[in-house]
Length: 491
Image (cartoon, rainbow, N blue to C red):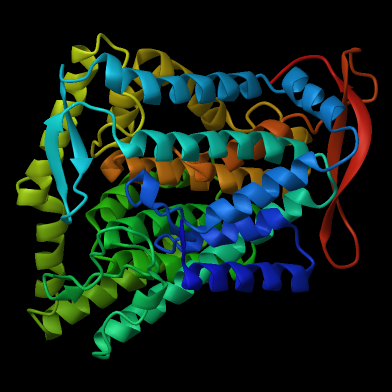
């Protein structure tokens, strides 16, 4: 393995900051997701696979979760209380076996899209084992272990607060590097963040779309930056709605501007999709005459924005021509473009491979699609899709049915990370080539499921002894305090 000096330096910087702030390793893990193209090194034996720096903190988190007294009792408690833990473990085993077995079992019986080792692209070939089977299965197993580790660590005081800090640090870094990337390109300095892009990816960072520079931030391309911006916008908006945090409002506003400037069709279409429940919520509040202050602020901003746009178009008739051209090229005519047709073909052949393998799939990492649901179906097959759907249903349910008995700050954190995960899946459904939803899905899932166990009554029906968490305020910050309780069922 060839170590990346830049990756080591960034890891050291994140770790030093977290230690200085006296935060936990989970905050470092989440914040490291801002560096979407920074690898810790290159594994030549796996076809040049370059693990990103978050894998380092991932492993440290798992070790931290296991290095404590009574760990086996706590692991048993997690599996007794959280039914999703069994599904995650079953999915890890199925994915690992499928990644090794299915490409060999169905070799040559269907086609697959694999990355070229010498070029910068993807080509179609007969299905066969590839190094990505091992590397992506490894990522998936690491994500599953992270889910279990977070479930364990959430029984400690302060873990939920550190998850909140990690998400805010992630999107603060994301915004900072997005602004630096844009300023560097506009000023003529070029890709000033190129030194931190050490991953072995195709870097599409200096691209112009309809006269606008495409913002890539610390990622390898604008679509990845736009997808992360969409997830961050959902997180900050939900947290602001729940708590009224001015910092979340300011960060969310900056993310919104960067998303609009990203020139990413994934971000634009994803924004339209995630805006639907927001609009529905505002209409519902208006109909019931219970308009919240945040919703009133959004409605109040619309008239001045519309009047400003109308005034600008009257004074300068062609002022919006570049914007219209950008929307036309990135959204309206995207499907008819060469890249759009190519990605549609990937999805078509991926669906065909699902049927060619009798519904078992080609195995994780064997091929790529251009949509997360299609990638899940084609790579994990019917059984893997069923398990993934069960986990997704648990995340979609969220805190429904228990929200009224949960501390408002717990509700705010759990709802915000849930919105982040769901928005990330929306972006992945528009352009992701892998079936692995990643830790951006699994960490929020753990937070939601553990949070559902918090409202435990002293007179509840006797059941398995559990450790519940109650969120309280001290003079300066929120803390998680452990309290022994019982719970009658599973999540």
